[in-house]
Image (tube, rainbow, N blue to C red; front, top):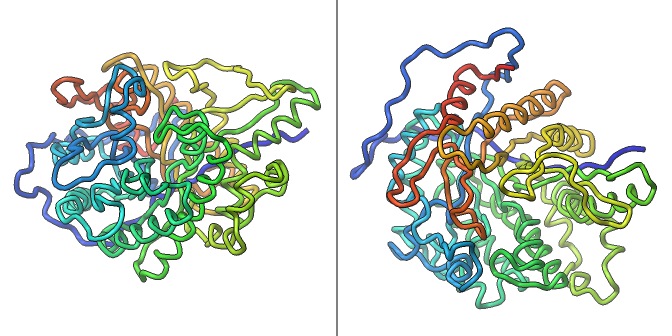
Length: 478
């Protein structure tokens, strides 16, 4: 019996732009790069393809801070995190990792590790405080400084347009429940293409629409805090429609480069050998993976998923003629985000078969990454893939050997997928910095760089030193 898996895509493309001055006025002192000769692979080491894009990822609300500075408007996460009981410890992202003020220090840290690629997100409400209308010059200037600093240090910028932080002004108009939000997003995307498109060569439209649907609109534990599966599916459709409209806007802009979506995919397996478990696993796979992969990569919703929607479900009316074709506007790459597998019982429940982390939902199964990547190739062809998120929280502040083991095992799975013919171009660890971890606040530390929760001072963890050696040797040791 064939097991059904899940997939994700990520994009790490080359940047076509010239160098800019490395240190702008007001730059903070950097971290000196290592001068020792690069290590070499020993017996049993796994070498990655030449030019492999070793990177790290962050997102705007989780690291930037400066929530009310330089004209930035509030996002749904500003509103949500300031509501009592929404975030562990009453935390919020007002300061986060203070990346907005420490951008040059962070750029130098990236260079000191040897990063080849950096995947970040643009705060929609920082560049468009109302979500629409005239650009906020000061907010846009921050991203110019960030991108120029990356290019000057030989690091490829990979820009994500939406990482869950819908402008509150648009949420007040209905947000993703409204079809108009897809057009608002496409208009914003086009402004970013014209503003940064001569410097940014790889664009990602949406980060994990599934998470917005499941946690923001179904369970309500993420912003905007809705708890209505019917509304969630409508929001999910409008998110995917926004993706397709943004891809069309990119083509119309005439800018060079590549564009795709970042999908979090989980391989779905029957929890046992029963026919019931196999059937339920197929249904879960449709909802977890296929309802995103099929529209984005094939321009159609899975027939089984559509059939499962009740006759009066609002999503049926939300899907209009031509929408699927728009969503399926050809992408240049797929960004894949992998954290955990899903095991499904005959009753449709979940089983846990592997160790978990401080984030109890994160069941550690590196072979799942291999299954995800090879499934994409098998089902969707030779599309370029970049892993844009993979990582774990560690309770160890600096000597995070558990994270090193996690990354090593997942990179070995990625190497195995490359050997099997997968066109994997890069890998981005989540995350570069300890940050605001959404509903968990600052209770979980996902970064390879420690950020002091009080001073925001930075220090490389053992995992950062390990990753620096991986990048230098372009491979991992056993």
